[in-house]
Image (cartoon, rainbow, N blue to C red; front, side, top):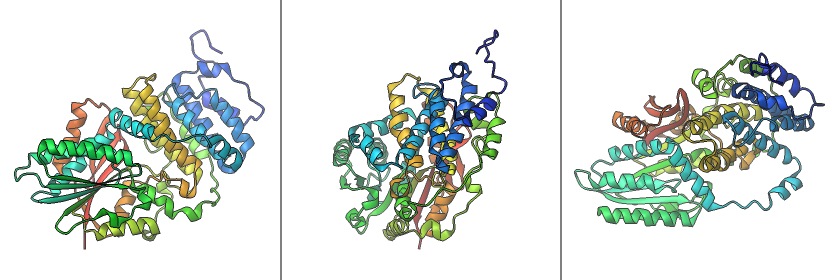
Length: 470
C-alpha cells in the first residue's frame, strides 16, 4: 500500500519481505502493492525471487519452485523494464527445465512448435542492426585478414557461420582498392540452411562482379558439429583464413554427452543473497558498471580451474581444432561470448547468465523503445532462446556453452595455434565505428593482444586472432 509521499510502505526493506515471501508456500495471492514498487526496488525483489526459485529447481523441490514461479509472474513482464523482461525469460527457462521431468508432457507441449528458419535469420540480422557487437567483430576480423593477406594473390576464407553478407561485402570493397590489386578470393560458407547460402552466394557474386574481383563462393550445407572438413577443398597455393563468429563453443556439447544425467551440485544461497542485499538505489546498468563481478555472485571461474587436457583433449573440439591446424591457416579469427555459461551446476549457470544477459538487455534498453517489436523479437527469439538452452538443457542438447577468453587462449595454444596480436589500426577502426554510429555506453579495449567488447565496464564479447604454428 502506498503512503502519502507516494512511496511504498515496504520501500525501506523490499528484499526483507521478498525473502520471507519466497519461503512462504501458503502465499499465492497476487500482491497488488508489489506493482507499486519503484523499478529499482521491483528489480531487487525479482533478483531475490529468481535466485530462490532457481535454488529450489536445482534442489529438485518442484512444489516450492512452482510457488516461486507464481510469485515472480506477478512482477515479470516481457514488455516491461529491463529486469521484468529478464525475469520473464528466466522463469520460462526454469519452468521448461521442470517440465522436462515429465517427458511426455514436455514433448506434447512442444510437438507443434516448428522452428521458422526465416525468423531465425531475421532475428540474427535484427541483432546485427540493433547492437554493434557483430559489426565490431566483422570490422576487426576483416582488418586482420587484410593485414595477414598483404601481397597474397590467392586467398581462401572459411566462414564457419555464413549468414551475414555485410561482412564480406565490406572486405570485397577493401580488397578492391588494394595497391597491388585484389587477390583471387574464394569464400567457403558453412550453414545448415541451403537458402541462406544461396542468398549469400548471390549477394557476394554480384558485389564481386561490380568491383571486378575474381571471386568464387563454395557453399557447404552442414551443422558445424557434422562438418566434413574434407569438403573445405583447400588448394595448394592458397593463403587460408578462418572466421568463427560465436560458433566454436557449440562443439563443447558433443564432448559433454556423458554427463547428461549427472546430478547438480548443492548450492548455498546465503553469500549471493548478502551481495544482492548490499545493492542500493542503482539502475541495473549502474550495478553492472560499478560492480560487474559481484552483482549476482562471484564468477565460478574463481572456484574452478580447467586442466589442459579438459580444454583441448575432448574428442570433438580437439579433433576439430587439430584438423583446422592441419590446414595451416595463415590466420584464424575467433569471436566468442565473454561469459562462463559452461558450468556443470545449474546455479552457477543461472548466476553467470543473469549477469551476462542483464547487460545485453540493458544494451537494448538504452537504444530501443520498450514497445519496439524488433526489440521484443531479439529478446524472445535470440536471448530468450539462449537463456532457455543454458538453463533448461543438459548434455548434447545444451549448445550454448560460452567460455571466457582466457580459456579459449589456453585451448587454442594447446591445439598448436600461435596468437596474432590485433593491430592498433584495427582497434582504432572499431572505436571509430562506435563514434560514427553514436553507440554510447559501448567500449572496446585491448587485452593480451585481443579485443574485448564491453557494455560500460562489463566485457561481453572477445575477438582473438591466431595462426598456424609448427
